[in-house]
Amino acid sequence: MSLLGKIFTGIILVTSIIVMVIGMAVYSTHTNWRDAYQALNTKLNQAESDYTDQKAAYLRQISQLEAEKEAAKQEARKLETERVQLVEDRNGLQTELEQAANQISALQGTVTSTSENNRLLSEEVQKLRSDIRTAQQERDQLFATTLKATTDLHTTAGELNEVKDRNAQLVQDLAMKNSLLRENDIDPTGEAVPRVRGVVAATRRTAGKQLIEISIGADDGVKKNQTVEIFRGERYLGRAMIIQTNPDRAVGQVLREYQQGPIQEGDDVATQLRS
Image (cartoon, rainbow, N blue to C red):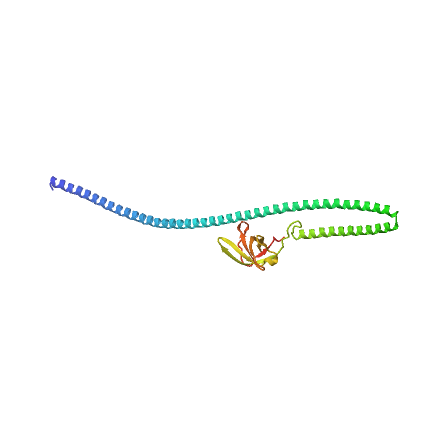
């Protein structure tokens, strides 16, 4: 083989080696890109799965938050209702307190009047005692004059003692009757208000006002413009003013400023609060 042939042979060998190396590099590169694609595709699938799970969790959280928001609104409405009820209860208690203060003032006035009456009665008793002593002195003076005058004087003294006893009995009866009147919540110095109880026979609303028909009327002493108290068991419900009376029935208008609960048929009514 000539030198030129050897050179070409060497060139061919080197070229073959280079081609082989390039082929191996291309094969290796092709294999790496496929693995990278598969790895990226796996990551993409995992990312899509994670996204789906996170989206579902997000939607669940949104739904839960909406439910909690609605529950919070309902709780707020409930609390507002309770606040309004507490304000109404406070106003009712304030009204009762003012009524109690007025009653105390009236009772204080009655006590003052009674004390004054007692003072006047004491002065009258002292005057009667003085008169009796004077009469006894006159009787002693007339006793020395004539027997007839003495007899008349004794008769007069007996009548005077009888009057005294009668007066004392009347004072005692008056005190007892005044005590009984006060025990029944009746002012002995004012107009007597009968204490009568009945029930609500019917209720209706007209022109924004609640009217009640009660089972007691004029024959029971109920009068127009008089007030009656309404209750159910031990619960106080409110007050109504009588606007119409019949012999055995009466119609009243519920006073809203005193109402403390719904009023219905069968509730009890009385001309005064129970003690």
